[in-house]
Structure formats: C-alpha cells, structure tokens
Image (cartoon, rainbow, N blue to C red; front, side, top):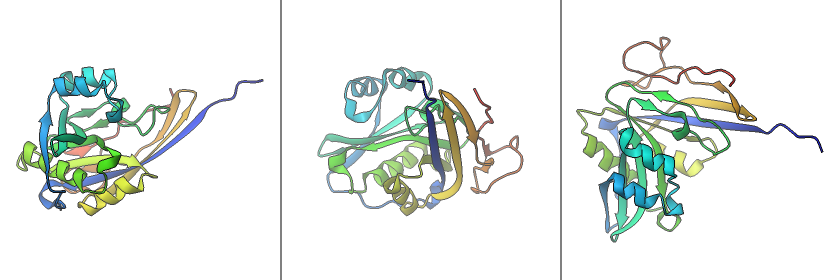
Length: 214
C-alpha cells in the first residue's frame, strides 16, 4: 500500500478587545479568580484535563506567560494563559497536527492563547470572569488590548468572545502537508483601534510574521 500525504487544514478567526470597553457577564456565585504560579502549572501538567504538556510547563516562567485560574467553591474550574511580545507558533495552533502561527505583539497588548473551562462548569460565564480578572490584574493603563483566536468551528468560544465585546479582526489559514505549512495570514492590526494596517513595521501593530513552505 502506497504512503499517502497527510494534509491538514486549520482555519482560525482572530478577535480584538479594547480593555476599556470590556463587557463582563456576572459569573456564577461562589467563583473567584487568582494568578497561577509556575508551581501550579507544573502540578496541572500532571492532570490531563487541563491539556498542559511538559514543554508548556517548562516555558511558563521562562517565557513570561501569565496564568489566571478560576475556582468554583474552591475547586479549579478553568484557566486562561496570556503572553506578551512574542507568541510562539506552537502556542497559537488549533490542533496537534498543525504547526501554528506565531504572533508579534506591541507594548500594551496581551495574547490570550489558551482558555479552558472544564465541561461540568461550562455555561456559567466563567471565561468572562477570567478575562475581567486578567484586565484588572494587568491594569487598563498598562494593557489596552487583548487578542485571541480560535478555530472557525468553535462556535461556543466565538459566541463567548463576541458577547464580551471582542471584535472579529482577521482570519488565518494554515495548510499543513506532511509537517510543512503554507499560510494565509491577516494584515497587521493596529492594536489601539483594531483596524488593519498596510505597514507591518508600523509602531503599535500586531503582526503575524510571513512564513513559507517548510
């Protein structure tokens, strides 16, 4: 039997949020948020429910990632991870079969690259509560923009982000053939306005660096 090329498609939508215009929903009673330490992330890497691999656990402190956990009745119900400046491609992919898309961030911008709420706690507005806590934690005067992305088929996450005031600002496409990728990337995005820009080198732009096959 001849070997067949494995082709994977990954289409994602990109969302932008002005932190001053965030519209948080009231979370479920008994919920509270707090930052997660590197030790917390190490412990969570041993619990498959949170999908934290050894590489992410190792990179958490060295790459300057910020983790926010949400607890319901003192039980961890979900978490979100943010980064600044540079989003490595492996942390901005929608499946393990693709290589992902790296992102360069200007000052004042954070990228929400991982958000998970355990199944038994979904539908309780916990993701909104985590984003609100993160905004307060970073400080509106320090962080004016949060960006995130998700697979186009993830209707629940898309609905949640749009309800909170995020705006659609672009789409990415990755075509992965036997481990090598071709990309269609969004134009640079002005981090203050959410509008696309023609100049990737313009100060204050969120940029998806161009990459070629291989």
